[in-house]
Length: 143
Image (cartoon, rainbow, N blue to C red; front, side, top):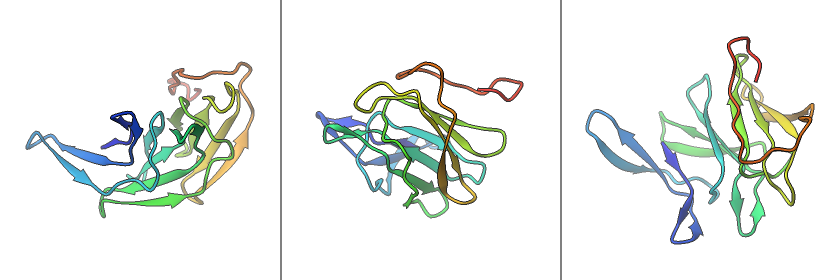
């Protein structure tokens, strides 16, 4: 699943699926919001969570879910902080940790998405502000 980005300098909401068996691309339902510089995470229930991004000169706080079985997008609770160039990490408990990024400045804030309730909660901020960074789950479960 390839989502959003820029096309001819404009933010887009398009989405495409690549079929490995036929080596072909097909368009699928477009996202509700146009967004480059966002993240996408495959949840344990198989849905894809897309968060944040940048559009119309501002960071975006919206989030949406892609359901592969219906090939449709639905909105979910918005993040507490608008952000782009952030990271999203699927944790071992099924929640998604979103960290850093840009808003009007580089962020150190972090928040958790709980797919079971579809809500965001703020969590402890990072010690340093980070944007365009990487994050991954270590073998001990820490990020």
